Image (cartoon, rainbow, N blue to C red; front, side, top):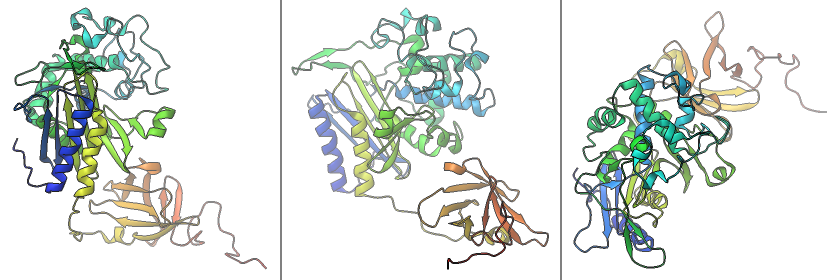
Length: 461
C-alpha cells in the first residue's frame, strides 16, 4: 500500500501525529501505530516508539484480539447470504450437542445469547488453547448466565461457537475458510492466525515503574475465532473500506450495512454512553457522529478500528502493551480530527437521468392526519418521507419495481408504501403500513379511516 500523506493538510497531519504521540507517551506503550482512511484509501500513517530508529510502518503485525470477531461475523453472514443458514436458526440445527444450542445465530453474533463472557479457568488469553480442545472445554458445565435473548452480555465463547459453525458448514478449519473467503479476496496479505515477521512483541508495562515484562503469545486453539488474528494498519485500513462499502467478492453493501445496524438491547449504562452492538460490530455515538468498528485486546496488545461512514473517514490504532492508551478514544479522535478539519466534499448535484411520471406526481406535501410530510424522489430510484416540522418519523424507501416501496430505516423499516388510485387513475392517498397520507389534512375526498365530519373544518364561536 502506498501511503499518501500529501492529501491531508499539514495542520491536519500534525494534529493526528500529536494525538498518537500523547497516547503513546501518556499510555506508556512501547509503540503505537495508526492510520487514517478517506475516500477508500489510506491518507495518513503515523507511529511513535520507545526505540529510536525503529518506528513500525503499515506492514508490521500486531495482535488485534477481538477485532477477530468481526472477521468471524463476516464468514457467518456469507453463509446466510448463500442460503446455508438463517440468522433465526438455533445453533443446534447446524452444530448439535454443544449444550448451548438453544441460542440463535443472530443472538450469538450480537452477544445476546446469555452465555458467559469467558471460558472456564485458566485464563484463556494467557494459556495454551490445547487446554480446551473441545467445545465442552470452552463452554464449561453451565454455559448460560442469563436468559437467552434478553440482554447484551459480551461472550467470547459465543464466537467460538460461531467459528465451529463455519467449520461445520464449510468442512474446513476456521483459519482456512477465513483465508480463502475473506483475506485473499480483500488483499489482506499481512493478516494471519500466526505472527509473521515483521511483527511487534507484546509487553506488559509495570503500573508504577517504567519497566517491561514480555507477554506470552499463546495459540488460542478453539477460541481462535474470538481473538486469534494478527494484522497491520495497512490491512485493517483495507478492511475498514470493506466494512463501509462492501465488496461483492465477500459481502455486498446491503449485508455490511446490516452488520452495522444495532442488534442488541443496550444496558442502562450503555444507553447513557451511546454504545450498542450490531452483528459483529460495536456501535457508538460520539462527538455527534455514529461510529462503527471494534476494539481488541490480548495480553501484550491493544487494537482499535473506528469508522464514520457518513464522514467517509476511518482510523486504525494498534499498540503493543497489555494496558495503557485508550485506543477506542484515540480512534474516535483521529476520525474527528479529519472529519472536522477537512469535511467531506459532497458529490455535485445532478438531475435524474429518467423519471416515471406516475412517481413524480407523488412528490410534494402529504398529511398523516394533521402532521405535514414531504415525499421526495431520491437519486437511487427510491423515495424519502420526512416531516416538514423537522421532528417525527422519517425514512428512505426502496423501490420494489411494482409501484410500491419498502421502508429502509426507523419506524417504517420493512413497511410497505403504495399509492392508492381511484378508478380514473388519480391518486386518492398513500397507504403506509395502514396509515393514510392525504394531500390535505383529513381530505374528505380520500379514504380516511373513521371518515371526515361532513361539516368540515370550523372555528369556535
